[in-house]
Length: 254
Image (cartoon, rainbow, N blue to C red):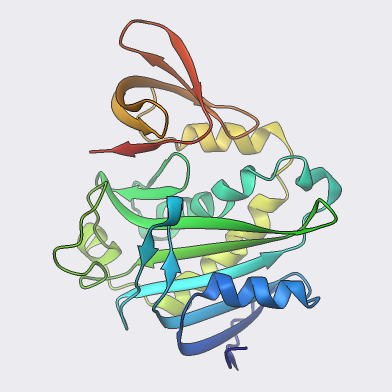
């Protein structure tokens, strides 16, 4: 296992550890989940060489320019019935932190990205540990672009990216931001199994009641008007013909 050193954050319910470089904090957290690590583990890396995004894309964090971490949750039986909501837990936590602490008008681009100024500043990747067909652990990986240099030059992007410094004009310390995100996750988790969580998600939903380009694996790109996120994490939209459609897996592009 990758060697991590304690990172004292003082956030109740979490045990944070740091290493300068690893392949993937999600991989490391999943490995620890498999050997019985309890809930609340937080693994933070200065650099990731094999970070993952959605649909198998690789993501490389750059030293000093990003915050890359993973959190281990042990879902309750009620939470296990709505696992898709964990995708939004991390993203909504960051959205609320940016709004409340840094006066930034952040939004959640379904299903798992945070936008500022119409540009992606963070992505979330949940991965589940299974045992006998039951979800026994959820690892929530997050990458937050703190300052310029996060995205390697020339990298092809489905959606334009930026960073917190460029969009807010503020130099936000990684340690401070991490502590605020974790504390907000605690608060939001209490809502996870309730309709209030979906209501908050919809109140922060990017492109709501607007037309945007949605790319699905089956149909490719389509112009749709975003209606709402549903209780199971799916997205309701209306296409250009006026037909209602439901998506479980797709991504918005610029």
